[in-house]
Structures are given as C-alpha cells and as structure tokens.
Image (cartoon, rainbow, N blue to C red; front, top):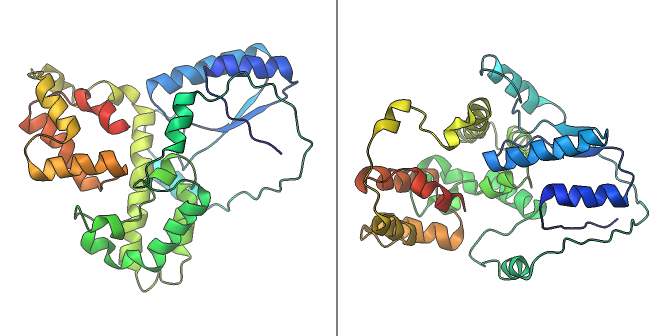
Length: 289
C-alpha cells in the first residue's frame, strides 16, 4: 500500500484521479471549516455528483451537520462519546500506479524539512504518548497550573494540535481518560479535562450552526464600533514588539513553539481589541497560523 500526497486545487486533483481510475466511492470525515474549505467541499461534491460517485462522510467528534439549533445536542454528544470505536481490518492490497502531476512544491518541502524543533512532533504515535503522559504524570498539576503562562506548558494536555489535525479524536481522548486507573483518585482533575473536550466540540458545533462568526461579530451591535486602524500597532502586536512584556513574551512564544495556553491566547486578542483599539479581524489570520 502506498500513500500519495498531492498539492494543488482539490477539484483538479479529483479530476485527474477520475481520469486515471474507476472510482466507486469517496470517503472522508465531515469537516467544519472556514468559508474557503466549505466552498471547496461544495465544488468537490458537485464534481462527484456529475460522475454519480457517492461521497461518504463520517461524523467527527460529535458535531452534527445541518441542525438548526443545539437543542438536544448535549445528549447526542454523550451518546457519540460513549459509542464503541470502529474496528478497521486493513488487508494488504496491490500497489496502484498513480501518475501524480501534483507533487509538493519545493517551498512546502523546505517547510516540512525545516519543521521547528521547538514545535510539538506530529503524528498519532506522538499524540498517544502525550495523552498517556498527561494522564499518568502531568495531570497532577493541571488544575493548579492551567492558567499560568509558563507552567501550563507542562501541566496542560497539549493535545490541541493532534486534535486539530486528526491524529486523535475527542472520543479517543474521553474514553482513554475515563478508563484510566487514576480516574477515580483524580476525578475532579480528569472531569475538568473532559469538560474542556466537550467545550471543544461545543464551539465547533456553534460555528457549524452559525458560520457567520468567521467574518461578523457574534453581537451585531459591535459592527457599529469605529476602530482606529493602525498598521503600526498591528505589526508590533504580530511581532511581539508592543513594549508590554507579558503580551510580547506570549506572542513570541506562540510564533516560535506554536503553542500557548487558552488564557494567554484570549489575552492577546483582548489586548489587540481593547488596548490597541484594533478590529479583531486584523489579527485572526495571524493567530490562525
């Protein structure tokens, strides 16, 4: 079995695959992404429909596609988190020759090769190692250090990048924690972590129901606020050069390591909007990196 990685326009890649192979079905998870990825999804769906190819999307992390409100969602989430994980039996297959006209660009290859040592290592194996070390050791100071800029680096779960990239699912995390030998003795700590796993899904579901949050204020009254756009302030904020030590330290840290805790992320955005009087949209793409 071989994995081919393509870089290019999604519909162009699928068109090439359709030309080279007799595709019977396409499988993926349901993605709750930004407007850009939603437009890509619709284009792929249209292309597959034209060729009468079913696209089977699996539910992800208890997120429900197409509901009008979150009434009854909590109950459905708990049912999904308690469900038995699917078992997959992969059998060796014949290698399929694929003439890949979408190789990775030299720029992207260089980024992958020079992946910063200070950032968390990627992949499922590392994700499981982080999960196990949290439950076994690091959770001991979770409640005490969760909000502290420095100590949270070793006391928080550090699972966010693995969850974002699909190396782990929320269900895997929840079931591992609930079945852990330390669960009863550390119930308050572990339940606090489980609550945050639910928050993770809650806010994705909230965005799934009302995706205008990407570009518009949750409270429409804030759209009338007049913000003084200052590129000088925005640039200083992005580079960690505002002159405010805690703000600058947090920004430089997230740039170098890819991670800061929740409280400090919230603080960076609050500083941009309140102290620097800049529109939140001016900084969203920067932190999204």
